Length: 228
Image (cartoon, rainbow, N blue to C red; front, side, top):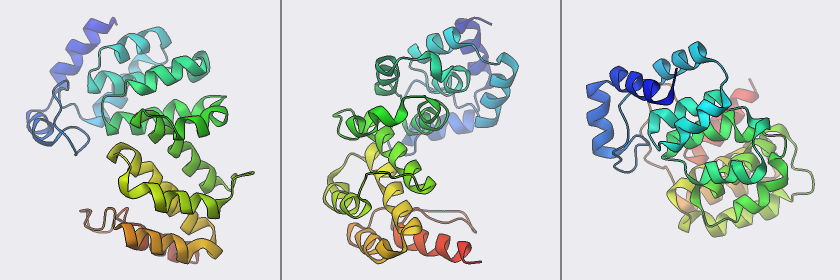
């Protein structure tokens, strides 16, 4: 299938209810957006399975800036085929937070050089690159692979920068805060205190049985689960 054919197919899969929802608050739930069709995530995954890996096609789809096309692209890209500058260029042109989640999980996290550019990305002016850098950092904390990073110093950086960070960056910075609280018992009280002080996602709506991203609740719930 060609990129134009895929875009037409994605448009045909669009759900009117989802499209109206996205038109009102944006496909990432935070801001209005226009270049989307309202396609269900499951339909995009099914299409990716049908097409299979196609790096060149993925790059064409990404360049359209369409939300669903970029989501599909993250499932078709070959991460190792991207140079670090090419990956940075793609990440900068992310269309919304949902695309960023897939890009960071399926492309950035699978790139052989992700650790080499983690810190530079965390400090980048692009909110999407900074979001990706913090995504990598949160993953390291969860895997116990902080290496030479001082988690206590990282906490203080989060305490200083989280309140004023861009919304795109706050999400993965908050994930890092939560991961430190969960994985480092000695720093748990401090991590929870930062979460309480900042108050980020305190009133985040969640479905019954789900854990909100508000750090004090999230950390305590995950620790409770780990302790059985």
